[in-house]
Image (tube, rainbow, N blue to C red; front, side):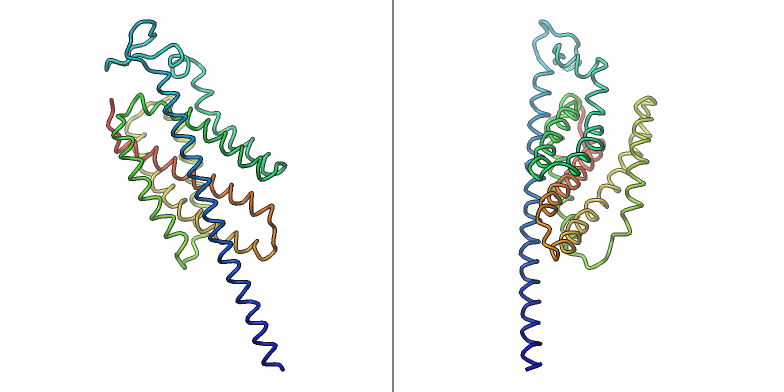
Length: 261
């Protein structure tokens, strides 16, 4: 009888483990799917805004870019007027204030909508890359980033090594990068920009692996409690974290690989 109880208990645990494994795969698919939608929204927003900002017709143009292209009135307002500071820092404000409030008070659907709006605003904020870099180099850098991101995320998901200790160090690095980047807006130092970009690639490469493992371990910890609402929000937060890792790694790599117009 005792042996039968042991077998029945083991079977129940095994069945629960299988259910958690299946749930984890579905959770990760949702994370990557949501992130991919955000990336598409960002790319479309960036391209659309840049298309509205540049023309080859000098009639009515406000500023020549020097390569047969001119800024439209919309482009001049977006990139050369004080509005550019709003466009530059709005994603940060949304990230630290808006998303935090949504996570505390909003439903999973509201958090998802907030993420997609954030992705569109990010597209507007980085649309300037189409004015500075060639389309070929942007696509090339994107593909390199995608391959690197996939490898790092896969390693973070499959490794048996606990890399949770990386978190504090990497977050400190992000804060340092943010401060240095703001300072360099005024210094305009190319050497400092390349140093920031090199360090930035390493930091966000590490964050890609760290965030992937964190999404996995967090899901497993909470799946045992059946907290469905929290898990739905968690998938969107995970998508946001990986989205930010990808975008930042792409932007920093573009400084090295991007061919300028």
